[in-house]
Amino acid sequence: MLEIKDLHVYFGVIHAIKGVSLTVNDGEIVTLIGANGAGKTTTLRTLSGLKKPSSGDIILDGINITYTSVQQRVKMGISHVPEGRRVFSTMTVLENLELGAYLRKDKAAIAKDLNMVFDLFPILSDRRKQMAGTLSGGEQQMLAIGRALMSRPKILLLDEPSMGLAPLLVQEIFNIIRDVNKAGTTVLLVEQNANMALQIAHRAYILEIGSIVLSGSSEELMKSEDIKKAYLGG
Amino acid sequence: MKQLLQQIINGISLGSIYALIALGYTMVYGIIKLINFAHGDVYMIGAYVGYFCMTKLKLGFLPSLFVAMIICTVLGVAIEKIAYKPLRNTTRIAALITAIGVSLLLEYGTMFFVTANVRTYPPMTGILTRTFQIGDVIISMQQILILIITVILMILLQFIVKKTKIGKAMRAVSLDRDAAELMGINVDTTISFTFAIGSALAGAAGILVGMYYNSINPLMGILPGLKAFVAAVLGGIGIIPGAMIGGYLIGIIEVFVSGYGYSLYRDAVVFAILILILIIKPAGLLGRNTGEKV
Ligand SMILES: Nc1ncnc2c1ncn2[C@@H]1O[C@H](COP(=O)(O)OP(=O)(O)OP(=O)(O)O)[C@@H](O)[C@H]1O
Ligand SMILES: [Mg+2]
Image (cartoon, rainbow over all chains, first blue to last red; front, top):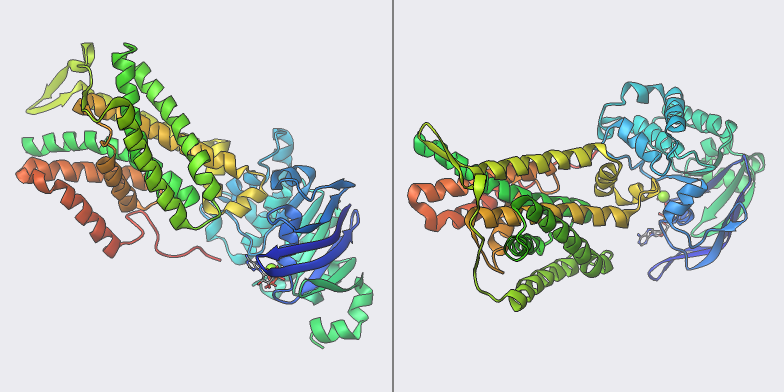
């Protein structure tokens, strides 16, 4: 469904992404794991169109989208939950969710999806009139995911959803990611928390300073000695 | 007491004008973090458009108001597209200097076309000439009209910003441009729309001032522009209700200072207030000094 071919991204003279290629198949959860500064966020931002690559191709369902606008990509079914959640702090939970459906016009279906999000995250339903900035970190993460789902994406890009959350909450969020995937949404999950990510992902790529150094099924990678040492704390 | 009430009424008229201009400053600042120094000149253009509509085209007041708002909308959007948009990803100081350049261009460009002479608005006719006496206080029909138009425009603005899709997009872009873009919001369109609304309000302020004070000139936007900017900072720059409150406060304070015989110092007082606010509450009356929760 989504394919990146030999992607290069620069920030001025900094060569942040050095020829990354990866594939996400329909229905999969694929995780991209890497340490601080490896280039995970940059990869996702290039996928959603916020950052322009210097070369390489991004292909979604056979269509080359490397040079299309962010808007166009949202329309085509890419939804990006950015690092640090980035909810609209002085807007209500409901307004945040409505903005997720900004490009849609099918009112009835939007209402249905809103209920779907509230079923997924009942706490958001209780807080719908509350300012997003007053939510806890975990609730904000739920809102960011819910907001992204409101565009009815084919593929969901998640940037470190576990960041700054207590282990129990991380578990909860990851369970929901798995549910969302089971309901038919393909997921590309960026994480530093390799342990958790490998547990829900089908396949994984390991990114080190801008290059993919290893890839394979999650089971394979969990057994690999190198991965254990570098990313799984043992 | 009579004196006090009369001053408040006069202050509300002047404050309405400042508030209308301040709204444009604050919305533009909110969305692109630029102090649009050319905004006071858009107000001046509004006054001239109103003048020509009423004298040359013989239009009535309300149609003239409408035309002034439309022309200022177009002008504001053009300024943004031509002068500011190409600089959006450069430094803020570059955009600020450009804004000062646009301001000078509008002032002296206008002078080139209409000369530097002061022009006098045509005398109002019919119902607009009436005044009312309530107790010892005198209210003119023009003052009532200023207030009514300002209140209608503010309600309309609140409605747009709070309830409509483009208004929500404006708030979203102000809060977090990247996140807004990820929602599929067209950031360029949203910024243009913000300039459009701010400029329309400035245009309305321009023609209201022409009607109220009669005389207009190409440099008339400088001082009210600065004071409206002070009003926006006073209320908390980027905050819409803040600009309204700030505008009325500055208007009323200025009228009081003049009314009690210190007319020479009224501008000094306004800027002294700005300095004081910046020292005591840098984020303005409605502004929060704390950062956002992460
Ligand atoms: N706006 C920027 N300007 C300059 N360099 C940048 C910018 N954003 C990222 N970089 C650089 O690009 C590289 C990759 O950064 P990126 O944010 O993609 O890493 P990451 O894997 O997401 O890290 P983290 O786990 O800390 O979020 C880093 O060396 C970083 O310093
Ligand atoms: Mg990152």
